[in-house]
View 1 (cartoon, protein in one colour):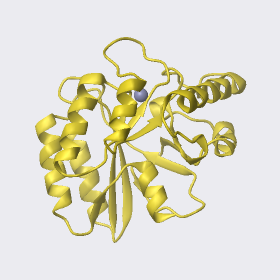
View 2 (cartoon, helix red, strand yellow; view 1 turned 90 degrees about the horizontal axis):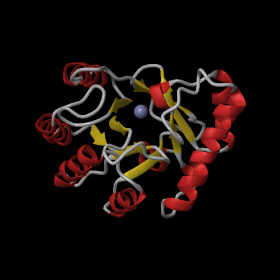
View 3 (cartoon, rainbow, N blue to C red; view 1 turned 30 degrees about the horizontal axis):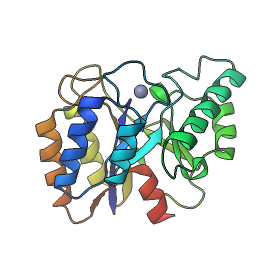
View 4 (tube, rainbow, N blue to C red; view 1 turned 180 degrees about the vertical axis):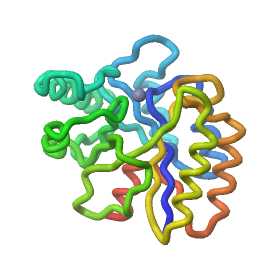
Length: 217
Ligand SMILES: [Zn+2]
């Protein structure tokens, strides 16, 4: 059993619309991790996140703003996360923080935040390598990898090769935008080819993080 999650961060409007369309061609759900407050109009808003969610995609929190929480005083980092989750509760239909996955900006967390966060959310994603064991009921910490600032396709291919070389596992790969957009992008054509290839492999399932936890825990 091999699970692949491409974890698309930051909420780029143009890229996320394209990603959703590409996933829908294969009847798959994409995994979008977005900010509670958007910096400018190149990012989507909760109207779009609700639409994408209705179309079957997963929307998860990536922070109140894009703050590196490993460099902030603990209480300030905690307040930003709590404020982020409050906005999600009020803006994203049927959002339940206790069933959500919090995706740290820069994949930067601290031991104190990791101890505290499961009181608010179901699991969190931070740095530590893309290959995770298959989850169980006690899974709280998910780890991921990424490559940038240029195109990350070669690195992602290697990570998928690594996943397929072990008997079972869950690759959580942190992607951002498509083509030229965002840090460490992948091409739209590459994404389409990759999904076509992955769905043809019998042992592989492509799912967003929350749905993996729903299905396997
Ligand atoms: Zn980010």
